[in-house]
Amino acid sequence: MDSRLMRQKLESRLAEDDRLISYDREKDQLRVESKSTGKGITIGLPGIIAKWHVEKEKAIDEIIYYVQEGLRAMDDAADLKEQVKKIFPVIRSASFPAEAEEGVPFLAEEHTAETKIYYAIDMGKSYRLIDARMMEKEGWSANSIKEMALFNVRSLSTPVKEDQVAGNIFYFLNTNDGYDASRILNKGFLHEMEKRITGTMVLAVPHQDVLIIADIRNDRGYDVIAQMAMSFFANGRVPITALSFLYEDGELEPIFILGKNK
Image (cartoon, rainbow, N blue to C red; front, side, top):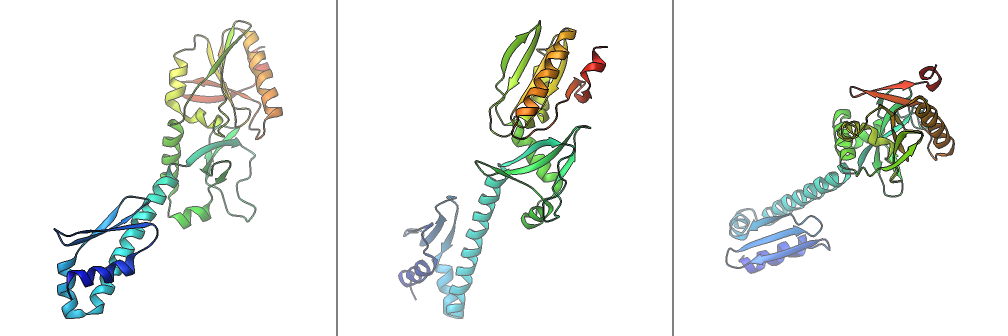
C-alpha cells in the first residue's frame, strides 16, 4: 500500500456532492471539506498506511467513520447556528392559547397583565411558535431560547415615523417584518426613545405589526393614543391589546385612559 492507492481508496469512499477533496503532495495529506461550511478535516496518509499494514481494511473503515462523523457534526453545528439567528420573541394577548392543538405547551412567559411573550422560529414568510416538543428535539433550554431571542430582537432595526397631534408627538414603528410589537422588549431602544420624551411616555402594541410610542404633553394626548390603539387593534392581522401602557423606570403598566383623564 502506498500513498497513491490509499488516496484513491479514501477519495472513492468520501466523495459527495457537497464536499471538496484536495491533496497536498508535499505534506502527503488529504483534505476533506464541506462546501456549505468551508470547514473540514485533514488526514495524514503515512499514519493511515502504517496502520493499514497492521489492521488492513479496518484501519480504512475507522478513518472513514472519523471523517464522516466529524463533518456531520460541523454541518449540524452550522445548521444550529443559522437556526439560532432566527429565534425571536413575539408578543401576544394574555388570552392567547397556552398550547398547540395537540396539547403540547408553547414556551411562554408573563409580560404584563395584558400581554404574554412567546418564542418563534422565523421561517421567512411565516414563523412557528416554539413548543416543548421542539425544545426537546433540538436540545434547547428555556433560558437559552429566551437569551437568543432577546439578543436577536435587539439586532432588528428601529426606524420610527413621527406625527404630531394636538400638541402631542407620536412615533410609529411599522416595518411589517412580524416583530414590530416585539421591539417593546428592546430596553436599549426604549431607553433611547425615553430621552426624546418631554411629557409622559406611553406605549401601545395593538397588533403584532406596529409599536406606538407617544410623548403625551396634555390631556388630549391620552384620548388620541386611546383612539389610535383601538383603531389599530380592530384592523390588525394579529391583534394584541387595545390598552396602552405607561412607561416609567423601565416598567410597563397598563392604563385605562378614562381613569387618567378624570
